[in-house]
Amino acid sequence: MPIRLFRPCVFSAAIVVILLPALSGCRSELPDGRTGAGNSPGGEIRSDAKLDSAALLSLWREFREYQKPKVTAGVPDYTAAAMSAQKARIREFQDRLAAFDAAGRPIAERVDFEIVKAELNGLAFDHRVLRPWSRDPSFYAVIEDSGPDVPAREGAQVFGCLCLSDYTFPLAGKDADTVREKLAAIPGLLAQAKTNLIEPARDLTVIGIRQKKNEAEDLARLAERLSGSNPELVPLVETARSAAGDFRAWLEAKLPGLNAPSGVGKAEFDWYQNRVHLVPYTWDEQVVLVERELERSLSYLRLEEHRNRRLPPLPLPRSREEQQTRLKKGIDEYFNFLKTSEIFEILPEMTLSDRVGPLVPPERLDFFAHVQYRDVLPLLAHSVHWLEKTREKRNAHPLRGTPLLYNIWDSRAEGFATAFEEMMMGAGMFDRNPRARELVYILLAFRAVRAMTDLMVHANLWTLDDAIAYAVRATPRGWLKPDSGTIWTDLGIYLHQPGYGTSYVVGKVQIEKLAADFSRLRGEPFVLKAFLEEMFSKGIIPQSLIRWEMTGLDDEMQKLGKGRLP
Picture 1 (cartoon, one colour):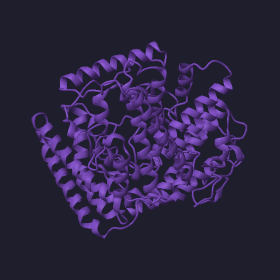
Picture 2: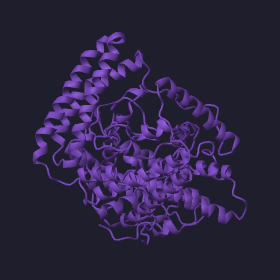
Picture 3: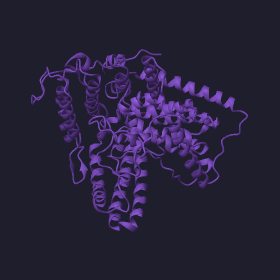
Picture 4: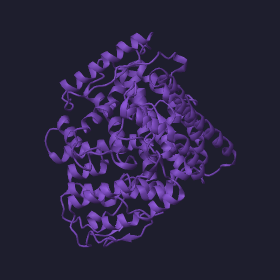
């Protein structure tokens, strides 16, 4: 779970939804509401071409290369000229995709088609709305010390950031050369950023200032780490640190004059969720779902507290050693439960880290530490993320085996990890410690709180300060503080990536809907392992696509995109 500011690296309700070319022949809705059909400029695909997996894969691979920025001396080019040139070809790719006739093809092929279409729409949305290279200072990330627990980094990401978890220390050979190149590129990247950021949004800039402070601290730690093994790299680290500090000062000087909103607005939020993330719910409908889950989690928390009223409270650890013992024991218990309860297949290479940091005193605990210090199992359930990453290394599907761009996987990845906590509670994992059930509902409540901040900041109904004040007020037991690294990290991600905060809750609802549909349609006893293994086999892709492929139900696909265009 995130515990500090934005982790960038790699550089009542009726439902709205998209008329898919898979269901409507060879025409497709473009980001500006027009329709396109017919031949590409090169004539590679005829307007009557049937959907062909090999041709689709070829187009997708070409697009994947095209969407990367050009890199010179380690510095990716996000200048106005470069971005204008990139934008100019998006229509070509969309026309070529729209030329495929997906009618009558197997659902699995049509799902692949929709994934490619969603990625094209994602780049179009970046150029039309998000424009992170010109609006978002945090886009220009320079260092990160850990990898994500999800398929790829959350939020808009500059290409080629120095991600320390990608390398083996002490550095040698190719690793040393690559780190040297990336460190040397940082001053040039940040100099370019000053020119590119012609429309910085206020709250995004506030986040960017905090991010650069954190990055300067990370660079200081890196210099100390390299001083013994790779002293020749230390001057480059110090120069990069100075550039990060200068960039932060530049942002601070600009901040008083900034008033542009950071949110995308309701209409654009709906467009993005429907046409890029393939989530079949509008902003208004997501508010209803989030409010319902918040109310449910809080009411069931009170019922659990009532049931457990005669039990002692969950004790905090008295030492680092005690917490280390708890974690190791909890990991063993977790894997044993998954195996003996037949939840899903545990591969030999699936492991979880049992390292703990220095013990934090009670008055300084952040939200997730409050949970972890009381019982490790609820967050171990959420750590199914890491087990999924291990499983995905075996995913040989040429398209679905690669993390989707623009976090299109969020409803599946975050939604499932959130749902899995409550699923494991229902399966009996917390029976030995009833008070741990309270933590599951507290986690769900907090995720609903965060989802609401995502919705409100993107509707431009709340500022960053409003969102933090609400989160502090609404989180159970006062476990969230306004200076919390958790809430600043999360809001940073959500401002960069509309709907990422809601994906935990809305994706969870979609998982539960899928389980209900799957069970009803199969007309046989529900076997959890069979359900999960079949779901896993589809890849980490939008939940709406998985439901379509697993059940044949296309109501969500029929609805996606029929709402009013912005």
